[in-house]
Length: 384
Image (cartoon, rainbow, N blue to C red; front, top):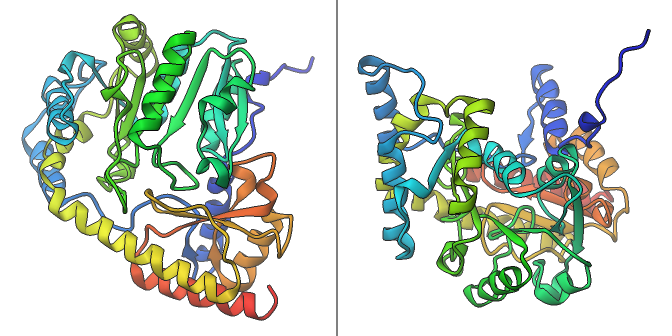
């Protein structure tokens, strides 16, 4: 008898991770690979975080914590909202999670039923739609472009039919675009008036270049806010994130977290508390990202790739390659093979038009970005 496999697992891959695997295999074989495929800072966690981790390993009992996170870390996160956004958040509204990935699972399970329709931008982070699909929730792709600053708006949502949820991201992955405070208010009001649950991905807050990011929590207490220590705080491998959870979902999220994860990593929680005091060090990373962005844009402009989403924040450049090919996956395979530069095809982020686009991360060292830009420019001049 053939054993049955669940259809829930038949979701598309996260292609960026497939590219990372292929690039790592080439490195293991001795190739000099430059990684522009994954959104990972090239810097370690702040020194104060690493020092706190060393102290915890020596002095603390690294065991289970409350499923919602330690009181000390939840208090620090709540204080961060008061200091950074002038928004009052109670520690009891904070849920510490095993990375933002766990936060999205908890949010989607607590807020939506199987069969619900949840809108999200295309292009957008692929794990949103893949997690939704695995849970039996219908992802409703909202095609966005230059005319909407690559972000959804109430007019586009009205064309999508009845909705149960909306996921937004500002700054967004892969485009780096941001939603202004005025537009956040419009989206929050639209969702509130129609009973649509709003989920705001704010994991790239802190990494902005022209203006500071606004939190949707300033305009809605019904929205779910997701953030992370991975990006601005350079703590990807520590697997630590958080949520701000509305009162009507608090107990559901807690019970789900207890059963799925028991608790977030205790060592990471103990280490993360001083992260909020490291802004000078972390803002220095952001200055480097800005420099890397401008360096990469300059090289691509000279090479003839002049259309890309405006990278207001995050550390990605989403580039239109339609003049070269409509097969972004094949271009990325050739680029890795011929230049040893790893980038991600746009199909990861947009199953509709992603064949015309690629995403490049400029989160690494300036030396790596400069060398990658040189290889890319040379390759394009030779005809790609």
